[in-house]
Image (cartoon, rainbow, N blue to C red; front, side, top):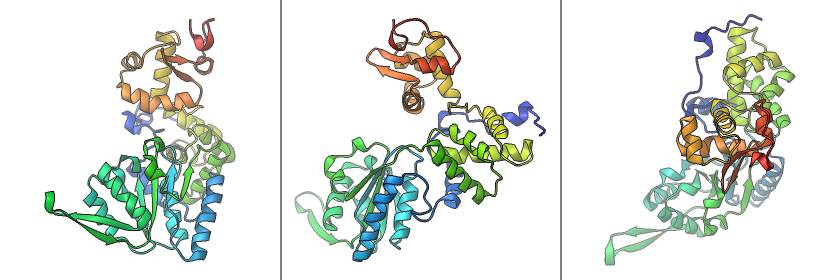
Length: 356
């Protein structure tokens, strides 16, 4: 293999702002284009989420046998775990068209009424980030889900009139990353609720091998394991890392993704063996080296790494907490013994998690 680690080669494609992180679970335009080609078309082809797949299969099969629309489905979980893919599979399994929109796009009840009134019988309406829908639209959705009817208000003031509008039976598939923000009346109207879990490394390896076949990329088992271990339990991140490793293998190696090639490529993109990127490590290093492991306040920690408090709290902290490297306490953020070990530093001999 011939690796040429010149600065001009290694800096291309580096993640910059937090929204452009290589390990960000949100989808960018490239992800959306590639996911369309890699997305499984039915439940049998969908990898992982075994419990959800089995339960959803029963729901859809029973609906097909009755010749009726499937019950409304709520999918919750972190970004990148397959909620949009499952919504498309639901439509495919029911042999029905699908309409895709999002909560932030529906700011008025009239917006929702226009969408609902144009649905055909049995159609699947996928509403992403449903918790961000406006309250008037949300209240209209209650009646639409339960009675397949909406009341359209015509006029204003004392002369306003409510005109009932009958809707054809349809299936609403709602997706949310924050199920706790959904009001109980809305949650209760879903006939089936599923929580998407993070993927185990073995499941991510299956995802990677399938994607590699579709992308025509030679991927060895050890190479897949190396990428899976750095993918933060998220298929979208795994597929994104696969594409970047493919680029490296094509330019710097012989095109085959081995363990060595994958490790070298991801080191260049600053994704370490545990899936931490530059921002994650900056937060840990500041916490350990500047503040002795904490406790330290969020705003102080954010200033130390040169980021906004919201960025540290919403972008870096969730994964660090899930990995057991950082803990939130009433006194502030503290590092765990695992954080000291991960950065190869000796933890001070103090109390639990380095507290004085």
